[in-house]
Image 1 (cartoon, rainbow, N blue to C red):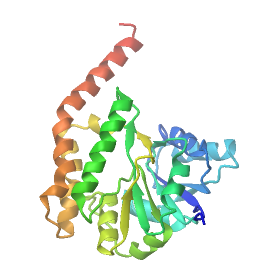
Image 2: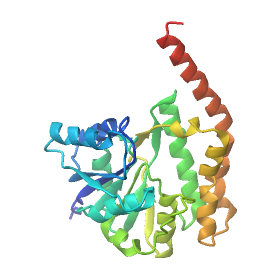
Image 3: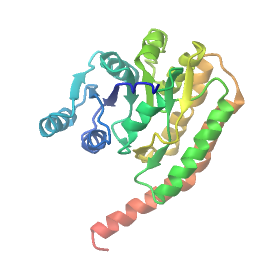
Image 4: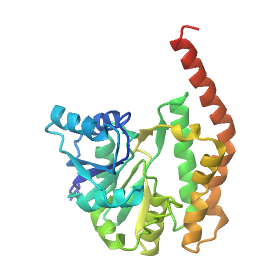
Length: 276
């Protein structure tokens, strides 16, 4: 007997994302199988994020877009938590406001979570504002498979492209770190707490999301602080296994070349716009 397909909510935390949220929502709406609801959690935005979401609600009234506010605290962790708490479905998808999920993403999530033992899962990403997008997708997928192999019980979750069962969320929601100092990767912290509860985290190559590589535009100091969140997150849980830091080492290693490439491309686009 075929397992019943679960209901799926999509949660999108947002802070000052007027430039990206429409693109994100269009991808979430135009699915081979529609999500049961799409929840945008606004976290004290000072730009036109809310206006953009409200316009999408009016344009796509059947899409199940919900706009809620999380004004108690500034930060991704409480904003994500508010979205997860508000979700009504059996599985909660979680993406970023600059994510652009593939058209079969919801369909793939439903298939993945027919495995009743699975508590959460992530998939690969394609960087839609980088050249050689197909090659980048393949490289990202292979690298994440390697990470899963190296991680042992501490399989990662990636906030730009992940899903978790509502049941698993309720099991760990009071345990996840509030991270008010904003020092950790909140998705990695969530994964660690799931692992500590003995819950299974999977990886699904077919669960694909596009995302921006805008993090590479940061200067070296800010980028290094961001990437070192891996080390700080594990250390906060007294986990000191060098193999778990492989992503940090790789991301630091590729930064110089990709940062220069993006700067050159930005200059080229600017010159073209000026007719140079």
